[in-house]
View 1 (cartoon, helix red, strand yellow):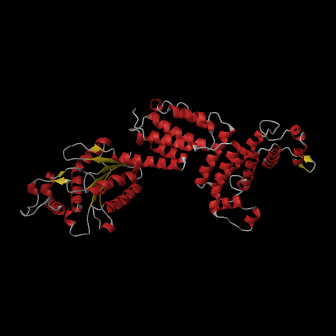
View 2 (cartoon, one colour; view 1 turned 45 degrees about the vertical axis):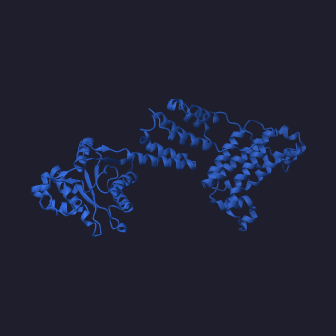
View 3 (cartoon, helix red, strand yellow; view 1 turned 180 degrees about the vertical axis):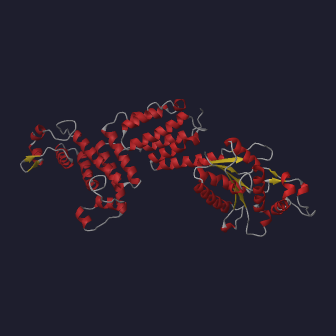
Length: 493
């Protein structure tokens, strides 16, 4: 059975008693009775006054927990003040909390060990209950401590009592530290009913949404998906179930697309176009179509943007892996554009008859007396270089030169953990391999690490030379915009 904990701020409106049980007042005194004096007086006449003292707020909170769970709270935490400054001590509620604890024990037959008084503790502010920063620090510490003791509890936060700083801090700190386990409740003197506040869920929902948006900004779709899946119930009052399913599908789609898993992309979006009455059907259909029919232009753009994302995130092992795929894809595209003939669709070997009909090409592929027909990257490079010059294809020649410029990075990929070795990667290493020869690297030379930024620009240039068009905009930005738009939509069920 789940543990329930009621946390109550204690203020000067938490107890009430008939005037005849309160201390006499000086006629010249203005304002309310000092809280400490009132509570001390009632404690002094507890036996005769206790049955007339009203727990104006906390009794309603206890009843609310009992109504919702069928039992009294397992633990009750009373948060009170006891300041250093003598000027403000008369208004502190530490004695009031002692009085409330005694009344609860007597009236509800609750074990005293189940009721705890915690004080606002913040040296910097002198333990002031009016200092927002100090109270927030104190409550964050106490709530974190409680959660470590009761990690799976349900926490009812009675935020009405106490100072405005205590009310605000319990609400915000409770939402921050306890998350969905926090249930804020609000009580008024005029009503016997305690009200559940949506404020805590709204704060938490806003926090979750900002985390998702932060992940979108760095294209961390897997993380965004997990955050949303774990907290999607917070959005049920603002998003229909179909919209929630669509958001999850789009996050999965983006993650799969970044990993070039286009079949899974299509599966993620299939059947999701009807969400919110089809409001986003055109955008969903466009995203589906983008991964349904892929050509070399499109594939190379996807590899480029994936590489740039990985570079910007500092995921350099994945980055050099995508450079490898980019160079390979470019070489294959140039080979097709220059009408290179292979034995079959896999493109693993050059067609012997095609090679042998060109004496110069035949000579380039000889290794001793043996004709090497294996179409690996070095041989593809030889064939493309020869044919581009032969037919005077300037664009292909320039693109091949650019591919040669990033060749060392492709070789670097083979020495990392994603291939055959354990070479560590950093921006400095990328810059050195991009700008320096292997001999200079072995000699310990370095270039400025910012030179690595030019790798992306070189890839962009290679694409433009081959395709006679710019690489265009990042497609993942359009996906992010759609997800943000859906989040901001107040959908009807």
